[in-house]
Length: 317
Image (cartoon, rainbow, N blue to C red):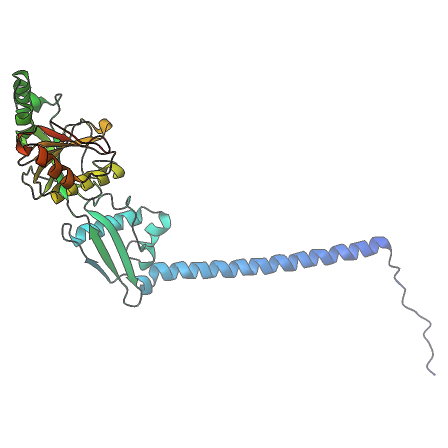
C-alpha cells in the first residue's frame, strides 16, 4: 500500500459571515449580467432605430415620385399641394427632417384648420401608393349656393355721399317703405361674397339680381369675410328651408334681408308681391298653402306683408 504523506487539506469552516459574503458576491455578479444584457438590448434597439431613420430619410423606398391632384376646379393643383406641404412641415422637427417629399409624413386626411388657407376647399383625402411611390389627392370643393351682401353701415364714409344718404332722405320724406325696401342698388353694399349650403363664405362676389340665385342683404354691423360663417348652423338650415318653401310656392324671390341677428328674423322681398316675414327660430312654414289661402280672401298684390313669425299663426296687411 502506498504510504500516506501525512498531509491533509485544511478544512474551511463556513461561518455565517462567510456565507453572507458569498451570497452578496453572487448577487453582484447577477446584477452585472442583467445590466450587460439590458445594455446589449438597448444598443441593438438604438441600431435598429438609427437604421429605420436612415431608411426613412435616405432610402428611396419612401421618396415621393409623383403627386396627383383630382377634383379641383377653382384652385390649381400647385396651390393645393403648396398649402398641404407647408401644413405638413409645421407638424414638428421629425417631419421637417423627413421632408414633405417623404410618403410617411403625409396623413390620409386633412383637418379644417389645415385647409384654412384654401377656403374654397372643404375636404382633401390622400391615397398613398407605396409601390409606385405616389400620392393621389382627392379635393372636394365648396359649391356656391348664393350671394351674401353686407350693406354699408352709417359709420362708413361711403354712406354719406351714396345710397345710404338717399335712403335717409327718402325715410324723412316718408317715402313708401316698400319702395325703399325694393330700391336695390349695388352702391348700398360694402361687400358681397359667395356662400355655400353651410353658410361658409367661399370668395368675394359681385352684386347680382334675379330670382335664379339666392341673394341675402345683411344690414347688421359685424365683421364678415372669406372663411367666416354668415349664420350659426341651425339658423342657416332654417334660412335655406324658408327660401325653398318660397320657391315651392311658385313665388319668385328677389332677395332675403337680415336686419338684426339678435332678433333671428328675415324678410323675403319678392319680384312681385308682398314682403314675407319669417322667424329663423321656427321651422319653415307651408308657404304655398298659406299664400293660396290668403289669395282666396284678399288681393295678394295689394298686400304690404304676410307675417309668418308667430308659430301656427299668420298675419297679413
